[in-house]
Amino acid sequence: STGRWAAKLSRDDGAEAQRQVVLAGRLERRTATERALAVGRISAAHANVIVRADSQLPPTVTAAQRATVEAALLDKARTMSPSTLRRAARRAIEAVEPDPAAVDAHEEKLLREEENAARATTRLTLHDNHDGTVTGHFTVPTLQGHLSARSSTP
Image 1 (cartoon, rainbow, N blue to C red):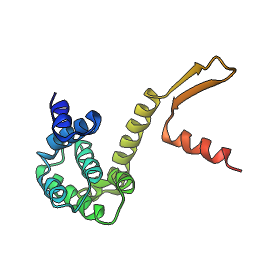
Image 2 (cartoon, rainbow, N blue to C red):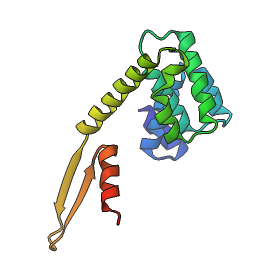
Image 3 (cartoon, one colour):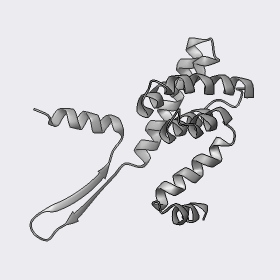
């Protein structure tokens, strides 16, 4: 695969190289983001947030409107961490949508999809260590993870 080839060439981890290959492909449609990444104005994590937000815009959003959304997210990326930008990107459509109810509905749709995907990947695995203990691994949705972390702190 291209990811394996890139990993071998760059002596990088295969998963990371594959992520970079995927990002490069997605940047073909977002040239302003590609330029900002190339000159170091944003990180790869920021670029991933921006291209993901673009892919989540409704199909009725025009190319010119997509460019406006991209510019707004690039501006926010100058002062926001990737995780903060990710939360702001859920409302990225507000750069071109004047109706607050439509912006809220779009954000709600994205959150519902994110929650459904998180529930679908929820897992708990346990391994008997044969020494009287069990080791486990779990994946839970972010909200439940934060709730559990808060309830366990004194």
